[in-house]
Amino acid sequence: MISRLTTNFGNHMQLPKSPSMIRPFLLVLALALSAPLPVFPISGPPLRTGLWMTQPIEGGDKAGAFEAQVRTNPHLSGVCLHIGWKDIEKEPGKLDFSAIDKSVEVLRRIGMKYELGIKPGAETPPFVYQQGAKSFEAQVKNPNRRNFGGAVAIPVPWDPKYQENFSRLIARLGERYSSDPLCVSVVLTCANFMSKEMHLPKTPEDRAKWSAMGDYETKLLDVYKKYTDEWAKAFPKQQVTLHLSQVLRLPPSFFERIIEYGVSKYPERFTIQNCQLTGRREDSGTLSYDLVQKFQDRAHHGFQSVAGFSHGGERMGSIEMAVLNVVHAKGEYWELWRGDGVKAETTAAIANAWEEARKLGYDGYKEKLIADGRYQEQSRGHHRGRGGRGRRKAGLVPDG
Image (cartoon, rainbow, N blue to C red):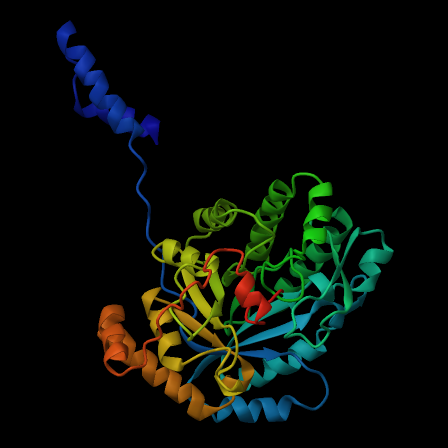
């Protein structure tokens, strides 16, 4: 860039001949060269828009019911398929794609787009540890999970034996599904706990164990760069979607460096996702929401509900406030929990509210909610920082 600039100066400008003019000229040149480079906007249209439904990949004879549910809901744009690594590879190199294939075949018959999400972390096959991969022992602290209080193990993300096996899996997945035009996204998994989000075990005891391993921030950054490239290489036409969430107590700059890396290398495909969307209040002030806001003009981005509206609404809040949060950040797509996604009346209500909010814009829709008495103020004393201890004690923040 600098060489081009100086060449252009040489081609189109003549150096001043008077000594008294040289110093001002050099000052102007130095300022021109030191000016920050322009920040380029998102490159290309989004590959995902509209309402999507999360769907676990299940074996057995459940494909028929799944197909009927998707076919009868005209408000869905796509399905987010997810499965644990250990469910498709029980022996090293021997991959069983039959369960994925059944779900994909259903969507192909319907002509429905889909995303693939493979969970390592606690879903890592036992053979990886038997081969010598280092494990991290932890306990499930999220009261919203069925195995709350149970002991689980995850691989240390930078362990070479773990990476050897997981990288092989990614390559094989790409060989099988990347050519399918209905497969438009994959989740950037690599360093995970109980889900596809970036969570890692984070109790004080857990943090002490991570610290004992050295500079885990740099090691994790290298892991995310490596697997951004590996997922992008295996799926060259798909979105590579990072599910943002707080990792230990790492600062926002850690996440920004990962996003900057992905956006700089894959500007048309790199995507960031907030998985803590609520309708209880405005979500500004939380780490993942603020990152989406900061990068909304540079990275494709979307949301996933933190809970289901059909579960009583207390944990998720109202459809209208959730829509306000999506519109405020110019969300491209919205992933609903399966319980909401299979109900046409629920998705219709969400779609209608989202369309109204898009037409009115953030400020106009907020004014409407205030006038209708549906706007939820931020509660006093509620901590919106990255720790989120109050929300976690109430069971409102996933622990991974």
